[in-house]
Length: 488
Image 1 (tube, one colour):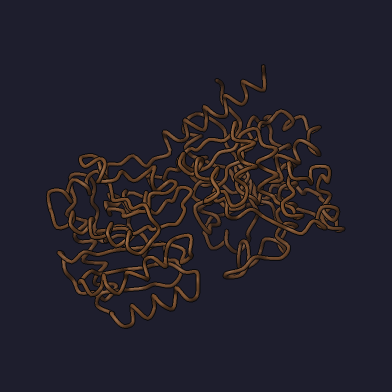
Image 2: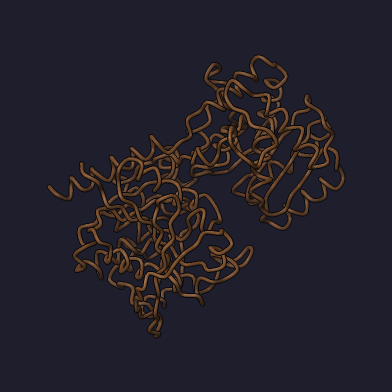
């Protein structure tokens, strides 16, 4: 098929503004699609000070879109930025988007988030309609863009350049659905005849995730296993029945990495370079990490690392239940993250009590994160659920062997030693209990003590193809299928 004109609409995209994995996907998958010969544009809010902090220059396009929102006629100038040949269109509305947090203050959410993102959705559709070439695919991401497929069907179907566009809606995390009081419907002009259980109504509230699921031509999640899991009561977040009704258009495509950005053979943030067949530099990275974190420098001591939001979803309680005994056994632990205040306090106290064996950095520091990926021996990811996860991909890219709970994308991307000894890249455990996590960690430690086995595990991890190439091709196949079916 000829070149496709694809528009990504997302609430965040790396490297301009990022809170999590959504930004990594929205910032890196478009590059992979362009490498396959397609035209991609990313539309996102103009988070003024976040974008300024990224160091990426932007310019005004001279286009000002007027949009009514909650009784006010707003003027929304468009800006443009370019990152390695990828065009970003940025929607300005400083009182909405130039805030300290993207979605809310630490640990919270802004009360006007529906107003903020519905305005963005409408302006993004208007901006897409002004592109030089008719849009083939509108690819929307998570609840913040969930209303776009519905708006396209009901209020923007007369815009000729987007009227025939097929909508793909990607669920990055079903737990965050965008629920808001129903009185916003009339305040914001949302199509009220779709406010019912088969549409976007959920316990008498607006549910933006349901709007996207109901109205998009295709629904994707970020791993095949997660696509299966969200159809079950355990992972369906009360939408499993609704998703079953739309399961004919549901599929899972695993996330990838920008492997040029995450490359231990060129990464300027780490102490020494290394790669498959040349791992001497990794030993130097471990020593440098131990030194910078104030740990005892020891090549033989297992160095366990974790980089995560400190939330229940991530299984941090399972780590806390085991950390003290792991330290007693002589292992070292480095943790980087922020989130639940109780979890932060517990980690701080453990590190304070055991300064030569444990280091805790509260917050996020990308340079330190890269040094942790490069210097660690074992990467811990005990998530209760994980749609895809990028941490385990980054860890394997840097030869740090993951111990993961067998859920979602962790199950799909980490090959378990128990089932594929020669091709293994890590260790799985099934039950979300401290005991199961501890058993898996001890299995990994036993492998670590066997230098021949560990060398193979580490080599397999380093060689794993975590690029976007295969997944981008899967997305293109999906896009082409939708367009072919629409043309029949």
